[in-house]
Amino acid sequence: MILDALSLAPGTTLEADLCIVGGGAAGLSLASALEDSGLSVLLLEAGGRKFDPRQQDGLQGSVAPGSSHSPPHMYRRRVLGGATAIWGGRCVPFDPIDLEARDWVERSGWPIGWDDLAAYYPAAQVHCEAGAYAYDVGTALPAGAPPTIEGFSDPDLIADRLERFSRPTDFGKSTFARLTAARQVRILLNAQALRLVTEGAAGQAGPVQRLEAASAPGRGLTVRARRYVLATGGLEVPRLLMASDESRRGGLGNESGALGRYYMCHAENTLGRLRLTPSNRPVALDFEVTEDGTYVRRKFGLSAAAQRREGLLNTIFRLHYPLIADPAHGSGVLSAMYLVKDAILPEYRRKLATIEIANRGRMVRDSRFWLSHMANVVKDSPGVLKFGQAWLRKRTFASRKLPFVVVRSRDGSYPLDVNAEQVPNADSRVTLTGERDAYGLPRLQVDWRLHRQDIDSLVRSMRVARDAFARSGTATLTFDDATIEDEVRASTPVGGHHIGTARMAESPRDGVVDAHCAVHGVPNLYVASAAVFPTSSHANPTLTIVALALRLADHLKACAAREAAPAPKAVPELT
Image (cartoon, rainbow, N blue to C red; front, side, top):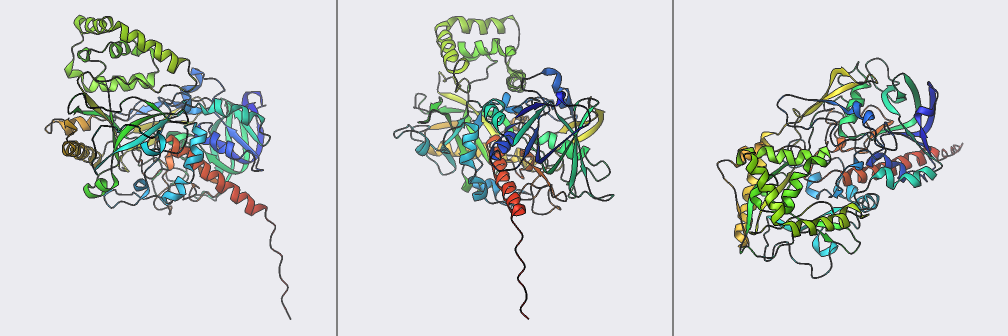
């Protein structure tokens, strides 16, 4: 059932067995998994069914001086479906090593094992509409699929791994019909959560008694439930926990002081240049389609053995196209993309701009710069026309969309697009400011930082990759050893990967939630979000967010079953 909070009278009280705050990938997956559980579920979404720019003001915040983080509202949406309304659809599972306690990564180690997480990935694939849970060439592609680079093999660099892409799936649309018909699930749109009120004595938390919310400033409503789940993302989760108990040290679940800290996004950059030897050596560069119709693309990843031997963070490399802003690439397609870049979503325009700024010293934007781009388009007009037709067919009008542009190099050389894990860094954090939004909620300030270990690991990972390609004899990876550290230091968190701000830990001394994602000290409050990840891996977080949400659904069902079970009859004592 879909309801609009604006239709409720101010002061309305709603009741449910479970209240979920947030209608994105986590919240909607959780609600879907519970629709036949017998539990009454109420899901609050701050936005409406359709995107409304006026509703996004509450996501506004600030960025700390010296941090290269994007404005906090970017990559997020207050709308049913949340950030999946604009995501690119990339699905990647974590690797087993990502959950391990690694002696070279302080505060690493999850309180759940790899098998606990991996058991939920197949179902998460279904929710994400990303095809089978198969992430290597041998299991995902038909027999006879070519190698990523012909002749390449090295134990330090795994070359047969894949990334899969959803449609991309907007969870607000993919779940709408089913959840509309669900008898035990109510979705309340335009319902902004304001504060969790707990039952504890002064200075203590205790269970959540009620959730205070509003359909508009001054139009309050109350939710009473047996259990509550925050599924609002890695920025909004700490915001609500902090705002819900201003009398305690930093918010609910903050006995460890970890709430809002250890914020990770992934270090992203374009580094070096890989030159095939010879330049026409076959390479699997383009998107491929699996037997179940899913787009996949190859990547190179550091092996677990190399990470352990060298003390490295998990890092992957993709073959990338040349700097789009530089007309020297000679590609009509890339020049056409650059000329129309202002028409794409701000989130993806920012990624292009970030790469452009990092290379600003290479280009002078004068009349010759623009004429060169236009000349590329004219000279390559047949290729641009062919590309435009294919883009309309495979992206604009297709149900399962081609994820993005891939352009082959004319000289067999490719920059490396890098995604690198970050260490949990207490100085990288989100905090509340004194400024408040229209509902009275404090706004966030984000202070994302690269740690010295992040920089060192990525520099050394580039060298490990260079040595691996050199040993293979199939390609040469070049970069300047004198400047690579400065280039890595300029890495930015381009995407909306908001991770680690309410980390999972066995003890309240070390984190915010326990192994079942229950907030320490608040037994009926849970978190379904990348906020709970203790470490970030290299992987995009959405697939793992959904997997953990489905795991939480099973836990909540088990809790409800135990509570519903009749108490055992007392056995009379023999006299």
